Image: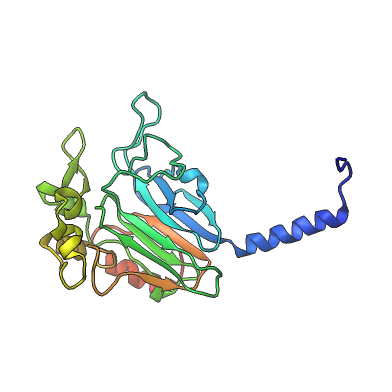
Length: 264
């Protein structure tokens, strides 16, 4: 027998439980402050749901709100130079199988990664970082709202693409550097990838390449065992992820401005 009438009590129950569900959700405000389009992408770790179809377009100045459930963990990154209008669709950096909506696919490195592990509820700290272990393509910042200086991951002092050694460079058809590989990605050596004999903090040390990354972007992971750890843990249900958060060379000024204004 099929139910043909809709109970007001059931309607109230669905509304009430839905509201509770929304209240438990975490929010990511993804913002593009670059002077060019960015195609943000999101990939969940195994067992977690895909958010926002896994990818979308943000024109300069645009923002998009993305909701995530408690205990969600995965990564965000930005794609550049994308074209989905032709037979050979895809992106010059961060591409995910030539698709606009990555639907859980992990992007092709090098790309700057925001790695997130949300808590089971908003009263407990969530963990997040920005990593260059897979290389760099864009500067990214992560802050909480309301702003907390202890929860801030700032942008970069300069574009790593401008300082990228030739052996790490990824270039476009014109020869312009559009991304910079990590030493691990470029050479696939245990020494740089912190594997096998070099799989501990005692044996895997910073290299001249990771030092270059660290000097440009002090608050990012420059290699697997970066120390002190740039991993941030904070209690918040609202995070702002910004592509191109500041002009090159103004990382400190950006941080000071955020401290004084407390605005996103």
